[in-house]
Image 1 (tube, rainbow, N blue to C red):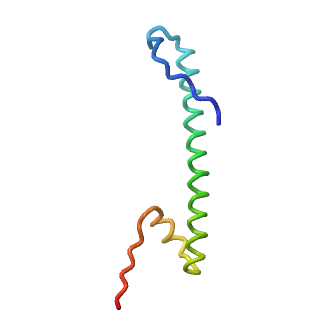
Image 2: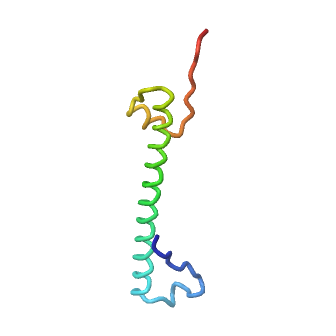
Image 3: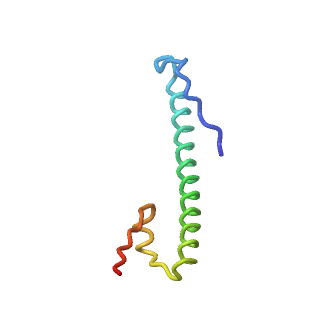
Length: 80
């Protein structure tokens, strides 16, 4: 993971040049994009892991339904 830009408030915004602000915002943007990528990779792996566990229990899984309900508790109404 790339080093995070400094969020130090010791320099007031009025003392920073436009170039420094641009560099800071550019670094911040790159960090946010990298964080989004990292989160997507993690969540995709987690979904695949959960899907593999579900397939093992039930046999076959509806992909569209699985995507819509991911993270939600599945309530099964069993009538006896």
